[in-house]
Length: 136
Image (cartoon, rainbow, N blue to C red; front, side):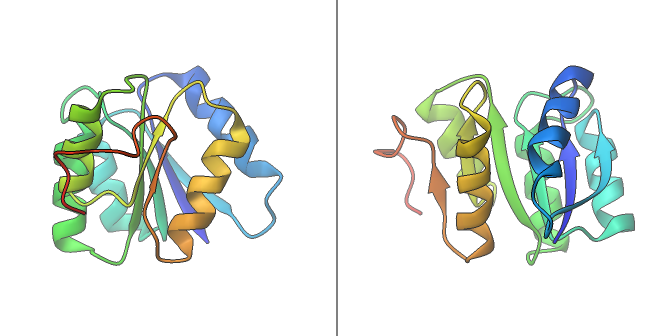
């Protein structure tokens, strides 16, 4: 599976790259530091999965997710945020994300989300799984 990582912090992109490196069936095909670049790279690289930060410069992750899913509904998107907010999670899921993971969770949590999404199911980090504003 081809993966694109989108986060505005280089250290976080490195950390995500390391978490994926041990997975032989996941291939990192690109990185972006803002939402506008993510939309462009999604079009160019056609990844199977995008790990998308929610708070990004130039175009936030929610709007980038919405635009990518509109043009490429087959691309799976795992939203990633430092905020365990139900509001952020609901907005990201409403935009078309397939998962929402809180930054700071261990790498196993992210991989669990990726594996769940690749099986065609949605995933929410523990603690935000009772979204009352999300109808997904």
